[in-house]
Figure (cartoon, rainbow, N blue to C red):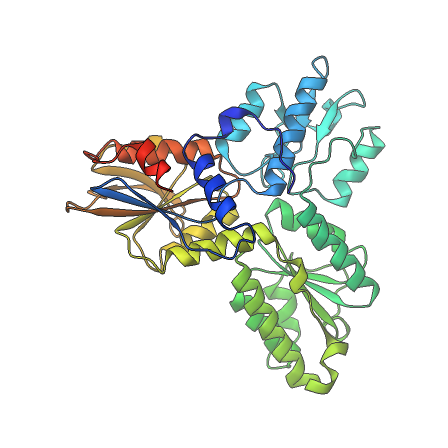
Length: 405
């Protein structure tokens, strides 16, 4: 896989070395078990796959190259490059201005931007409407487009299905930038509807099987279906694609449910006429990170740390997976570890930061599981690991532990 030229301060001496060792041992990525870093009184279980994915590194490389090559031009980002506060803040320090927040609320109005400016399209992609607006302003939307190739793969697959008269069911968060972009692209070729989770898929299934009146579709999915959507005609042939950062297992469960629904309605022998197989649209990095996180839950640990941006969908899902087995603390960086007794962490259910006391158990041997989101620099994970290490009288040096890998 391509190696990207990103700022060295995003790399790390510990995690980068660990990843290199694991990659050398497991070139085909068949071993999803975590690495064990044993320092004596504390042992870290580090997920096999985590951190910057292909799409993120590609976007970061392009953004910093744009800054370097255009010192005399104004440079804008449509919205956050990726969902990590440290990366976005560093881009601001390099002079990049953000036009909108994650939800499309403007910091800078369109009439302030002209054809002399550079506008970077972030890794999530953008809507057709915004692409057209930028083109009308004479702004290059090709040279400065960092849309993840795996997001574009979803769009291309949806386009192909649309041309075959399939309706597109998008598994995603309706307000997320990527889902808004995907919806904008799919509606050009096919009726489309966004569903958030398995419960909404069950509701849609009831509509298809006429267990619920079709009027309920329009109220339940208000604001999440394409113009002129017709329940009677547009739910006869369907295919499922996803926001690439959603739980892959949930996307598959939704697809399985809707496939079973179409079999109930039209018969097994006719399923290919009514349901499209779209398993090839799942993002490999999301899938690998989630599979590695599930492998973490097969181990024994006293608690888990998930590092990343609080508005990062893929990171939130890692926390969701880990909390099924461990007490899990979702933090943005090492500063959230306030002391050996206190940690400030994000509660994905309350959607706010809370403080927990005595998070490290008082015992002879403590085991800590660690992973991070696809938009989190390895250097930040290093800082978290080193801060936790500082609370223990370790009997093994970092060099010895790394040499033993």
